[in-house]
Length: 162
Image (cartoon, rainbow, N blue to C red; front, side, top):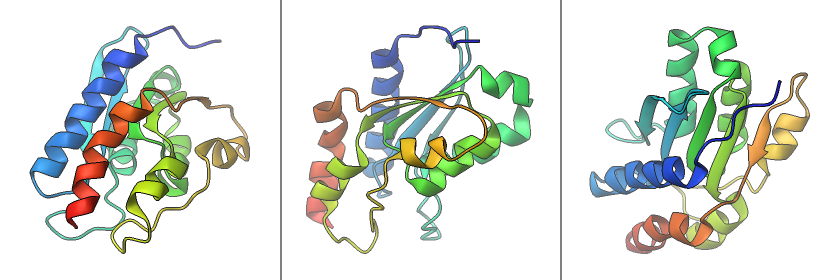
């Protein structure tokens, strides 16, 4: 069954705002929003690198973990994960294992790598999330990159200062 049409720009911009808030608090500029099939925001998550310097504290991974603990698989199959940046291999895997049905992202992993370079706090895996998800046994719809220039803004200023 196809997932319903949602206003991708609105939810992506919400993820961008969460990413900007994470950067304002000193954490990495990533944000994620989980939306059900009716367009209701179920949960939001900023990057969780701080306070413990958790390199696995990516917004999408933390959100997927929280979602899998709170919602049933049938609910998550109808849900969309909006991410300020393309989920890395770890985050795509977490969304897959949580059972999330669709991922929509702003900034591509490749574009992120161009911005961050070889920064030790963001050793970008330039591996498209589509490739990770295509290796699974169930389909996950992937849409993106969308609004990529907008999505890149918090990263340009944040990583230049690090």
